[in-house]
Structure formats: C-alpha cells, structure tokens
Image 1 (spheres, rainbow, N blue to C red):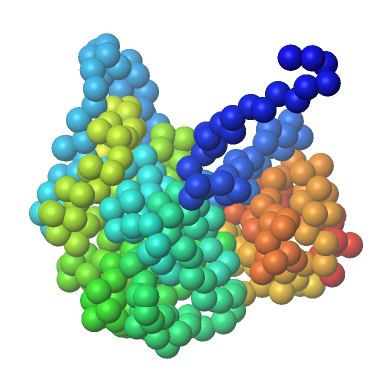
Image 2 (image 1 turned 60 degrees about the horizontal axis):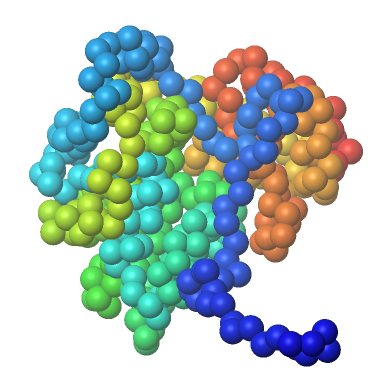
Length: 370
C-alpha cells in the first residue's frame, strides 16, 4: 500500500445498546468546598438510635463484613409494618433500584411508560434502557393532578405498559389523593397496564395512599430509607409488589445482594424507632413552611409541597444557587429542563442551624429571586 492509498477499515459495532445511544445519565452533585449545608438532594437525617446501631454493627464480629448479607429479616420487618406476606417485599438499593427493577420486569422494547412531567429523570432513563418509550403528561407545581388525562392515557393504543404516579412528586412536591391513586390503579387494571406508585417522600405528606394500594395489591409501591429515615448514603429501600409472583420477577431483575449488611442493620434500627422518624418528619414539615414563607416574601412563586423540600420559581436560578453556595448552602437547579428553567429546589435541613443558614443566605440573595 502506498502513501496515497486509502485503507478501508471495517466499521466497529457500537459498544452501546441502540436503545441507550445518546441517552443522558443522571449526574450527581460535584464536590464544593464552600458548602456546609447540602440541601440539593433531599437527604434526611438519621436518628441517634440508628447511628448507634451502625456503630455497633461496625464494631461487631467480622462475619457481618466477610459474609454476603441476608435481607430476609428486613423484608419480614417491612412486611409486618404493612401487614402483608413477606414474599411480596423486595429489598433494593434505594428507591432508584426498586424503580429499575419494576421497569425491567414490566416493559419490553416498544412498550410505553407514563410519567408526569417534570419527572424524576431515572424513570425515562430506565425505560430507554429497555427500548421503551416515555409518554409525559404535564403536572406542574400548584396544578391539580391530571387524573382524567392519566386515565385516558391508559386507554390509548398501543397501550401503556407501566403507569407511574409519584406522591409527593419530585421535584414539585405535589400530592395525589387516595381516591386519585385508586382511580389510576383501576384504570391500569382495566387497560392491562401495571402501576408503580413511588412514595419515597410519603412520610412527609398529609395524605399517603400507600397503605390502601398495598392492601389491595393494585400497584408496585416503592419506598425508601433515604429520606425520612436519613440513610441515603447506605442505599437501602424496598418495593412491595402486588403479589409474590411479581416480587419473584423483581428479584430476577437485579443483583442478588442489592445492598450491605450494614445497611440492613441500619434500616432495621430505623424501623424500630418510629418515634424518632416522626420527630424528624415533623421538624422537616415545620422548616418547609418557614422556607416557603420566606421565599414568597422575597418574591418567589412557591406552591404547596408535601415533601421534605420546597420548589421555588425565581428570576435567576443560577445566580441564586451561586450566591447560596458562597454562603455555604447548596440548592438544586435544573438547567436545560424547560419546565424547570426558572426553578430552584431547597431541601429541609432538619437542623435549626441549617434553617438559619438557609434564611440568611436567601435574604442575602434577594436580587436573584425577585
């Protein structure tokens, strides 16, 4: 071959599935040495009893570290709390893993998942990884839940394979009533679709349909220990499936050991100390009201939230986030997402000093709010 010859090289097959080419990954926060109060990820605060249980587990025998963990005790404790067969409960690596398993067990290539926009990004990401399409219905902060549109969507052809309802919603904090949730579940049953009810923030709401949906076996109900129980760093959650067969399918769609023995010990301790959890939730609800009131006074548009955060519509989200970071407080912005272009989300710190820091930072950044 001469220098003027052109080598013809065979095309290499793509290293990525055709279903995820061009897909956008969820991007966690980046370290920021200025920040003391990380209020951008809705993380809760663990109870002292849970922290003590973690310390005891770490100080215990090496078998807890050397051996693969068992999740049977945790799944039985969760089942007892909800009054169901333990065979319906599947422990997962947080609520994200639970969502991923439900999507994997219910959606085939070409199927559709129904979400309410703006939605948690992982619903679409998991669906895309299965070759499924996403149908989004608008449900903005301050708007009523689009019940009729949701029910109508379950009747479309080709039909929805999985309908998701998140209450309280992330990132808006909107809440779905029990009657609305049951109506969606009934429509899904009529149309042959499955329903996923994500209640990661259920403890903070005035109304939580989880118990009824679990009792009826009409939905996959996803719960997390990351929020009200403050165990986000340990990655532990669970899903209560409609029946043992559906739960068995979920087990086949994920890792055999989704989390750690340490996470199990912490989750069991958290379930055992319900008063501590309720106290933490009460603190967050009180802080939520204070933050919403101050943001409104500074000129932001703030809808009612049933979660452990407040979503505010402001003049300059990026400017506000930068000013608050300089004051030691991290908040969430949504650059590139049209329905959230003017929004910031502020988590409840569950700490008097943290709340004072938020209020002071907001007061010092009024120029970006009004």
